[in-house]
Length: 166
Image: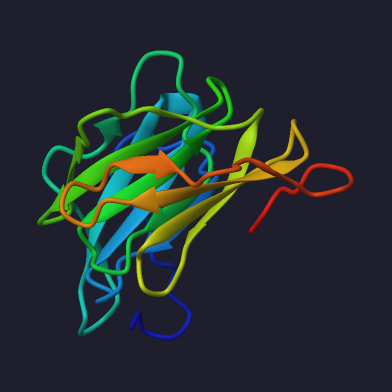
């Protein structure tokens, strides 16, 4: 950890408007969404002192006119999911040594203005809070590819104003 009275800083170029962070299950990688840059930054976490080193290739572009906002790492550490309220989709990436590459079929349709996102502890399902359509999208995760498919009956109404987080 940094010495007392010192301020650690990131010196990785322009990094604006981070909206969410997700740590890999082993704690070895930190992912940060930057919706204004249409990108996700990836950092290797030093287990000795907590310092961060940018993963080669970072930031990883998420596509033109995308806005990655919420993030969730699959419990296996092999996949990263991001909500994209600009396009009402879920973006899916495979993770290799902290580097991201799109999963086949990504992006996947979601409700209106997807915001919060979470996987179940076993990694079989993904849940997305759609703040604009007042519902929750549920998906089954293909453990080998990371692709997602809607659960029958999804999205599920919340009965009120839109959820922002799950």
